[in-house]
View 1: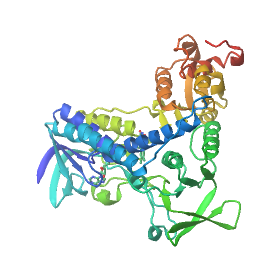
View 2 (view 1 turned 180 degrees about the horizontal axis):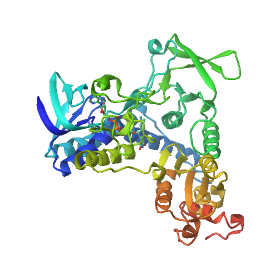
View 3 (view 1 turned 90 degrees about the horizontal axis):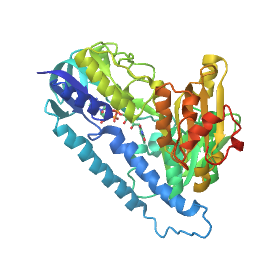
View 4 (view 1 turned 60 degrees about the horizontal axis):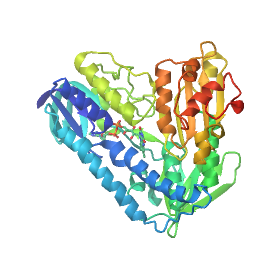
Length: 468
Ligand SMILES: Cc1cc2nc3c(=O)[nH]c(=O)nc-3n(C[C@H](O)[C@H](O)[C@H](O)COP(=O)(O)OP(=O)(O)OC[C@H]3O[C@@H](n4cnc5c(N)ncnc54)[C@H](O)[C@@H]3O)c2cc1C
């Protein structure tokens, strides 16, 4: 039996941030991870590898679609296995530099590899050994959900993990689910030359601004991705080397088939709570198996905290998992009550163009105020987009009907993930459209779009001169 101040369960973004803060506070800490290698989802099988492959697809696409007359670029060779290996090499490097080395330098933190199970509210078991602590932080992450489709296990499928590591490119791929992971992988594989079909249960495919998601769907369709919405997948079976999915469209009773070499499951993620024996610790979970947490990350047991993908928090991202880990560590060890204002946290789907948002959507504004002062501006009105020949995007801004405070910004454009950081600061600082209008973004840049959107509430932007 070993006693410490804090036990952290997991080895991803949430766990690492918690461990770094605990070390800074001088707390005797034990961090226990199992399953994914150190670094967890983001570096190993999430953000880093997916964005590396998306960039490879973007470069290939740009070569063909730059639309500059007189410039003809040919992609002479595409070696799928080599592109994957390049991605895996980067993952290995970052895992070592940003996780293994960092952990070895935390003098108050001991690391163990092993599956954690609770045996009481103050005790866990790892590899047959018991460990006690005054406080706990659960940062056990989540795993790709396997939907209840008859025959899916027998037929076999990919999750994001295998789809980032396979060495043979599927010629045809079915993606089930059109959330961020489904959309990113669909476009990535499509740009590599795979024929991709997305089957999605809902009518629209991502929460957020419908106008912008509809436009993104149009863009992906134009690129060659087949997107089917309102789909109920019935069963899966094998036909020779092909995998077959039988589905119904919501308004039709007839069954339709789609065949492919591989099926990618992207219907969401299930929190890793099943094997933790949380009932032994008296920790409550919700109907999606997520640990219920308070605004300061406490579970139903006040001395046990939970952060990141394993919780029922509103945004499941790397930065939120990391920040929650830091704050939970401080709350646990210093009895503080830190929390996060999730309304000021941006999200991004890293398709090309990227779709990013922060703050309220039009629908949310309508619910709050019964009215929405919202404006949508096309990137056709942004000079830099004309220069880049990337005018397909939109920016939408929602402001407070009386104070003109900026309440929400949603952007569809190649670097929306970068631009949204600017909108995040405006929302965090409670800036108004006047503050934006009185600022001077560099010309010509895509970031001017935020100023043009602010101007659109009071001016006819089609009559503005080039340098707004
Ligand atoms: C394909 C993909 C792409 C993504 N891209 C982005 C992106 O671009 N930007 C972004 O912000 N977010 C992205 N995300 C989301 C982001 O990766 C996660 O929100 C974040 O990594 C969650 O961190 P975490 O610490 O909560 O969990 P994880 O990083 O999953 O860490 C949990 C760790 O706990 C271990 N564990 C589980 N159970 C136990 C147990 N009983 N005992 C011991 N250890 C256990 C797990 O094996 C794992 O190592 C992406 C996710 C996916 C799947």
